[in-house]
Image (cartoon, rainbow, N blue to C red):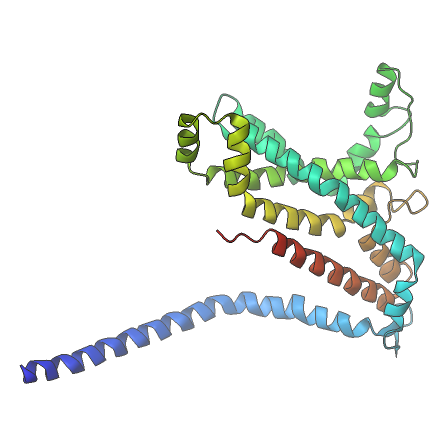
Length: 308
């Protein structure tokens, strides 16, 4: 008995040694797969961010390539810069309007196309087409739709005997025109996200609730919404980030006008850095915006945290 126990012990140690070597080899293999992506992130993301952070403390003019260390002066100036503060206000206005409306529309569309009936595939494709359309193309088309003389929107207003207006030339309506285009472009993408979340909900829950006499509305508020909490959190956080850093639509559609009424924070950063060549000041504005977006995202993640 003793001899058999003694013989078994070396076998166990040898087996554990082989397992350890196997795990180490797998770990090294995994690192070799990760290394190229990590190198790309370090070279093209983190290193430029670090360089930009240093530039934000400098008076850096792109024209003469002059650099002068100014400490926190750029950040202090931003706190009293009304153009920058107004651009933040426009970005937050865009986000506050877009987040609830776009999220509700995306969820509603996902529920409508969830069931596999005739033409469902066609409608899924039609709803998703705006996502893959180029921003420049979409903005150009909407610029024609908003035109006062021959735009489709004003033709409709004339048809129902309502006053016409040039949406993009009126400071009171220009941002709303950008908002409609932004939601039209993005709603299909988040519809797909919600559709994936809906498909992950077990159908047994709905069948059991029907047996208990639950209505469709009760099923939606007692089953669908609670089990979509993580999906909704993802959609809201991504929508918030996209809305606050929105600039492409503004660049093509209004160029920040009229009278700066659609100038968002990212467009302001672009204008300062690449039009007025104040790279240090524009970079400081970018890091202020980064801090704001990070803080909002952390708060949202805390609010949507699911303990289940």
